[in-house]
Figure 1: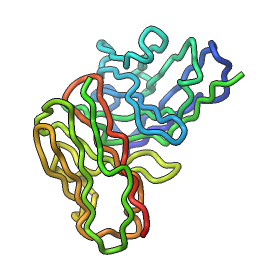
Figure 2: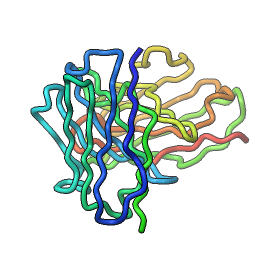
Figure 3: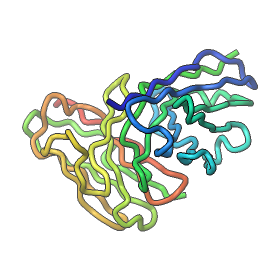
Length: 119
Length: 107
């Protein structure tokens, strides 16, 4: 059974940093691209970042480029999102999601982790 | 960026009703469109990909159609568990973008 479990969310002050993790199980992690998608309270879904299966290619939404870094450790079956210079508008539930091979939609999602940016 | 516009933003319907949600892309995306269902406090769930392919395990009352810029999601006979918010997503190019969502509410 495919499982994605996010962790690392919490309360952080504006300008602060946080690292999210997504532990994957039930599939060959290194074979799949992985994405982060976020949802601000009461709002819709927003793509944040993507990484290829081997980690060699990364992509970012313009809204986070230069502030967030996506990475993965295939030996640990874990995806990461290092977030810096956090702003109020970054406050959201962050989901990790798996992308089927050769496609760019999301077939499995984690349960999400809440990031609150507030002083 | 490709803009995705969903309509309506909300719809009230009764159990057994046929419900249709539309999604329009700001430029052609062939059939690279997915639909998701999201219930409060839960992660989205994939329903349809490739505009019309039903994800494994999704009931056949859900169907998708369209290509190019105009797409529809149809629920043929609304069930109590279908009351949720539905999102389309273009899977054609980065940055991936979602529609604003359609909330299906109980009439």
